Length: 132
View 1: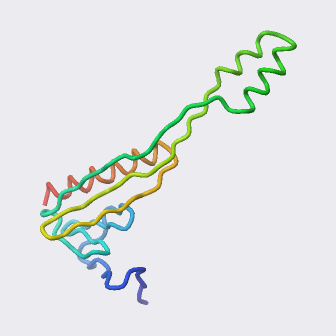
View 2 (view 1 turned 90 degrees about the horizontal axis):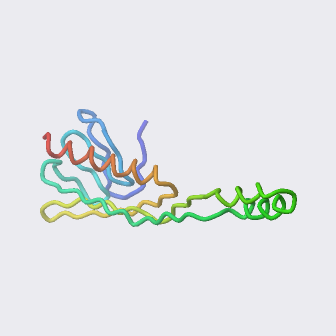
View 3 (view 1 turned 45 degrees about the vertical axis):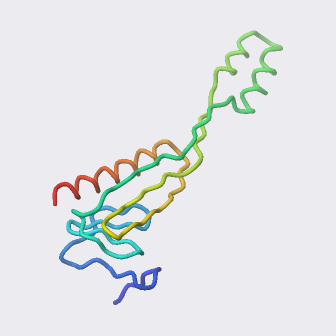
């Protein structure tokens, strides 16, 4: 059974080197980096991770409503105003660059945990580049 790849000219990795980490449309094996732009030996690339996300903190609407309702009955309703909601929006940009080779990908994020996960993946890919 053959597997279809979404990009034309995008070759699957060789069975000798399985994919160790994927970052968006970038795949890394022990010996090479595979992108829609082509393949490159992993020891000849540099990695860049740029965090373009924003995290905001606000009081949710339900907490404001409960604070008003319970303020009428007792002053403990004001404790609902201490509730905070964090929301992360934006994306991270990952760039892999070699000699006459450049590929960038932007990955949307909706939590700080996704940002940390992508950063850890890029750090792992950097360690693969250094170890080869």
